[in-house]
Structures are given as C-alpha cells and as structure tokens.
Image 1: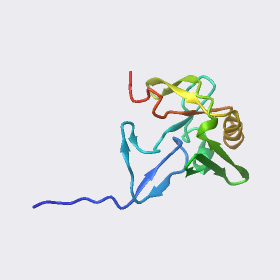
Image 2: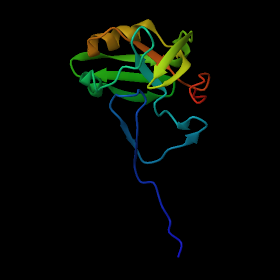
Image 3: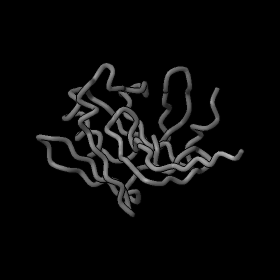
Amino acid sequence: MTVKAQLTEINIYPIKSTAGISQSRAFVEKQGISFDRRFVVTDLQGRMVTARKFPKMVTIESCLLSDGILLSAKGHSSLKIRYQDFEMKEFECKIWSDRFDAYTTIEEANQWLTEVIGKEVVLLYCGEESNATARN
C-alpha cells in the first residue's frame, strides 16, 4: 500500500522568534525552507535574542515582499526593509552553540526592533551569503 502525503499548510518564520506566516506551499533550498528563519535578532555581541526572554518579539509580524520584508507590531509604525539597502557587513552571530557570520541589514531595522522589544538589538541576515549552514 502506498501512502501519499500532501502539504496543506506550513508556517514560516522569516525572523527567528517572531510571528509566523501561514503558507499553503513551500520551496526547499540549500538552507531549508525558503524565507524561513533567514533573519535573526541578536544583542550587540551577536548572541541571539529570543521571545523566551523578550516576549514582545512574538508581536512582530513580517510580510514578504518581492524586494524585501515589511515589519509591523501593534502600537508601532510599519517598517519596510529592502534587500538592496542591506549593509551586508559580516557580523559574528551565536545561535545556541553554533557560531557563524551573518550580515548586517539597516540601522533603521535595529532601531525599530530595539523600540518594539525594549532591548538594544541588531537585525542580521542569514541568507545565501551567510555560512549559517556550516555549523561548528
């Protein structure tokens, strides 16, 4: 007997520890599901910041755009981040016990997230150029 499985819904989380986006289909790339956890919020030392310690993170919603990502949170104005505006400076990041280089985005994103979360943070991009898949 052959059993067929079909994906009907999946949640992706463009920014780790923030609200997810429900999708009816997904594409898989070298780093995993497209657009899933491609961004991470860290403190100024590159240590991941999570909703476990900063629960306001789960109020941050992302909307994927063809040229970037739109961030919103209740009580705050929305922020559009365009990929072409990313600084793309290497920034050492630590997620749990893994260390790798991610890339800076824009200062406006750092300021916006700092205001929403209540802690000085940095938004990093872990896209194709990152070595996030090469775990130590």
